[in-house]
Structure formats: structure tokens, C-alpha cells
Image (tube, rainbow, N blue to C red; front, side, top):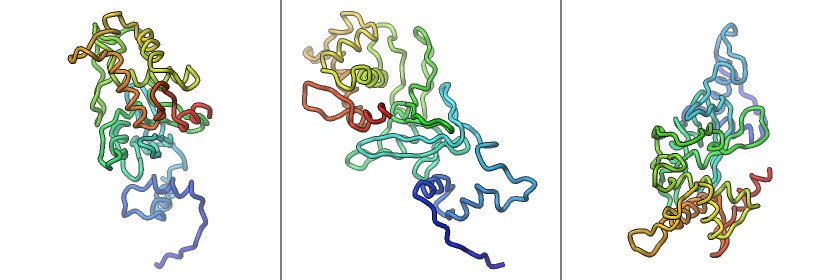
Length: 259
């Protein structure tokens, strides 16, 4: 039997949600809506419209229900997606973890793929909520030092370590998180020397850890660690490319904080 088609006007947000729900490039928007609405299923077994029966995504103590919106900014570009039946559906592709999703869609300035710690970059908007939350801030905080090495996410190149592990310096990914939090506390900007001191105090670094020199015998290892963390935050669009002498949040990140 020939199907009858009728034009229906939809706004841009609805179109984006249809695209995010596609299970493959060959699936048409009409097929997506028929699947989501249960048009082709017997009425007795049609699922209710909404999140019932759809799986949440969970990892590292965080659970994101089906329908959670996610977004990240990297290299001046915004990436958006949604948690769909236990998977990260971002820009038409499905991923199993935040790091896999970040690395799957992010591109460097030269257009190449890159491995990213998705816990640092993604923000989430839970169903029924109005405020975006940074994914890393949703992880449960443990008191003291956790002697167990954290599990590595698919696509992650650096493991997140406890803030102080023996005499070693904190991992770069942890310093990035702390530097961003420091900027938010300081109303968006600090000088490099203020950042070195404030973060060292937060991590409880000893004098030796704060002043330890690198192999070249000139550069301070701790200050170099903080500078590299700052550079990654700049590349991710979280911090601004300011002249030397001041570090600040980017306009995008500042707006997210105020929203």
C-alpha cells in the first residue's frame, strides 16, 4: 500500500534531536520518528514516549539517564550530543565513554584526531534540570588518598591519579581541573605566580616538590606542570589566550559559569 506523505514544519531544535537519534546514516528522519513513537509496533507492546525502558550510561560513580544532553567546547568548536539507551550519541556516532566521545569528535587545528580526557571537557544537562554540570564535578569525591589505580576510560591517554601520591606531583589532568576551579573562585583571572602558589597549597606540596628542577637544571618542574595544564585548557577553549602576565577564563566558559 502506498504511503501518504504530508509536510510538517519543525524547528531547529527538533531537527537536531532527530539527527542525534539516528541509528545510522541510512535511517531517514521519518524512520527515526516511527521508531521513537512506536508506530510500527503493535499497540499492546508500544513503549510509552519518554525514557522508560531505556538504559542509563554509568561510569566511575556517575550515572547519566537516557535523554541527558551533553556538550563540550574544543579548539573553538562546540560539540553536542545526548545519552541514548546507554550510549553517548554525538554528531551521529555512538560511543561508550566520555573520553571515546571526546576523541571521536574533537579535531586539532590541523584537522587531526586527538585523544582527550572526556571527564575534563564534557558538561551534562540531566532531564528535568536547567543547569549544566561539568562531568568531572559529578564524580564522587573520596577523602584521603585512594591507593587503587583508577580504571582507564577507552580513549584516555592519561590516568587521573590521586591528588598526592607519595612524593610525586599531581597528574596534569588533575592540575587542569584544579586550575579551572581556582579561576572560578578568583572571579575569572589570576597571575601565573598566584596560580603556582595557590595550587601548591591546595595540593599540600612540600618545599622540595614546589622547587624541584627539571632535567635541564633550570626550569621548575611544578611550574612547568601548571603551565602545560594551562596550555591544554587554552586549546580546549576553557581559558583565554591572554598576553603574558595574566591567566583568565575564556568568554564562553565565563558565560557558562554565570548561567
